[in-house]
Length: 459
Image (cartoon, rainbow, N blue to C red; front, side, top):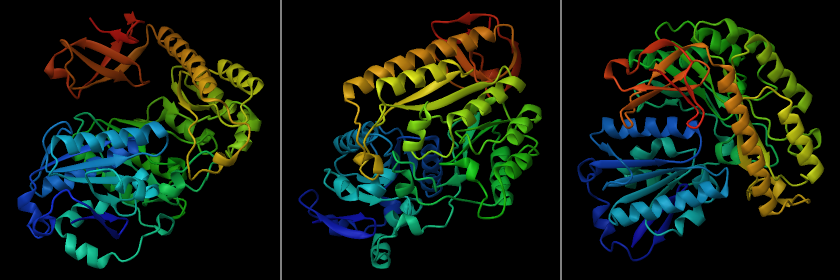
């Protein structure tokens, strides 16, 4: 009989490897040589997977593609949508098919919220939520000790520890985790139940991580978290305090601010970015709904007037800034009139792009009990309308930037003889591949736009 750890409980799994008890006594550092990760969801998950992979590599594991034969497969899950959960199940089945004898670990948000559901999927050996996933290697290295030690489920709501991480696979940039958890409890969202309350490290310790990336040669760092604008609130520090200090890390040339709430990105922060040495004119600010009725129903902490003020202020002082916004379509109560008002509002703003999410019922979110359910086919129709608006806005932004003198950070991807990079204001640019440009920044005039590929081409 096999056993499966589910948030510190041991559950038997029947009839796959009869001699599992014997195998369980082996030295795992010898038995397992290859590990593969499959990461779903946000940039924060990618940063955490990369840090976990680094622990395996330090302990003499080789990291391989998830499509390859491995001894350990790790699926770092997301629970934002039903699609993400479906991808998790598919990844587990894929790993089990490649190597039925492998250890399959399912970690992260979906694992935190639905461990029993995951346990029913054939092949799963380990299920660890966000409270314990950073200890995955320790568990694999000494299962008996951990099963003896972990007697009770660690409720994520009680977790106050912040576990730092950053991605290392990309030669040019890194996602740096600066914050975790959320105190907002928006009505559509299960993330606070999956990741716990908001927490972060101190400014000093976060700067230490930035220096590690500096030594690793990273030119660009993306600040990521669940609600990064909340950084430092338990240490009497602020996100503004952090970015002022990060700007002093000499050899990191570029920072991007990932998603930050409209009520937390202040005019003070915007002013700083406009004049800073290294923070780029690139913003991602979630809107989620375009009417105050829906924003209130979602339990958001701002109204659309505040959102518009932030967007217009950025555009006024940084007219070439890339400004993206998240929007949820098909939320309960989104009537035809509400949707039309949302479209009109979005069209009126100098946004560059939309990240459109079709509303998905989450079992732990309170909106699952709301009235005014929008039929799925209408949700999909409205999603296409907003995606079309996004495409038009992005093309208009690119056309607006013809003639812009941009700084391009070139990446290592080599695709059909071409290499690619992104400008300071997040415009995609291509040129003929030349290895000497990898992880370098060049200044180029953007004057040859290919609107089909949404990419400027450097001759």
